[in-house]
Amino acid sequence: MTSTATHRGSGAVRRRTPLAGESLDGLSAVVTGGSRGLGLLIAGELAAQGCAVTVAARDPAELDRAAEQIRDRGPGTVRTQVCDVREREDVQRLLDSTAEECGGVDVVVANAGIIQVAPVEALGAEEFDDTMRTIFGGALHTSLAALPHLRRSEAGGRLALIGSIGGLLAVPHLLPYSCGKFAVAALAEGLHAEEAARGVSVTAVHPGLMRTGSHLHAEFGGDEGREFAWFSALAGTPLVSMDAQRAASRIVGAVRRRRPRVVLTPAGKAAGLLHGIAPATTTRLSGLAARALPDAPPAAGTAPGGVVEGHDAARRPSAHPAGLAGRVRAWGSALNDKASARLNQHGPRPADGGAGEA
Image (cartoon, rainbow, N blue to C red; front, top):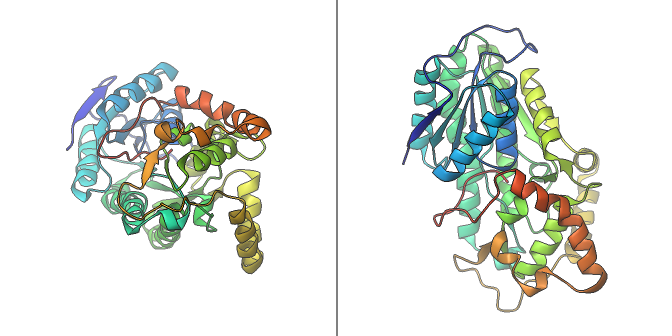
């Protein structure tokens, strides 16, 4: 299930040994889930800083478009490889082939994931399993395959695991996502502690809401239209969400400086701080917020296929409420809608499911 396309040259890249915090110029980087959204911007930022970047995702057409977008930003070596992060063998081939083509691996960003938005009564174990396999399994497979290469890096390897504020406190109607991201947070902290003596830094990244166009590739269950309406509005509201390019720059900067943890967006920082200081109060407040979210229809079941992609949820009549609610939703999602076209969030994902962090 792996194919490789090389852009802007191939073969070993120039190797150098920068000190911590120095330029990433000349290093070899891998980004999983890098064909769209935040992953695409992180890959572009690494390329702009002089890395030879390997972008991995499941859709070859998306990968081709992503490589073109990164190339248009400026000079840099970009190669792509089809990879399903849920499959350990795929990820091992990705890291081994990158090391062979680029003379080693110095920076790895595990970004692949999915988002499911629904009340728990509209979900079954299958949805939780799928999320855990993609978010946590993908981060785990990437970490285990990358670490031997990163330990050999002359520059001192850097690994970043993309978590979420949803991995620091559980978010209503995003429970499978939060479970996966909590596991990623634990993995990142544990690896940071164990790998420091080997010269490998591990950065846990916990973004809040970002304007990446993620609402079109997220999955929605229960009252799909109403779930899509609130999520797309919040994910695009400037006071709540963050510009995705700024987020990518902050993430790459944190990786370059070997920071153990970075939390993005003021709202995310505030929520994480409150949960750390007063977890019981935060849980009660989450319960109040959950009451304002859509109820599942009486017919909602737990059979597989109980969620639909954002492209489809957007067509539900309930996704476009009338009056003030509709105007608020349209305003809130406007910036996110623009981001979707800019960040390769074009049509629906492949029929077998997508693995790219939205």
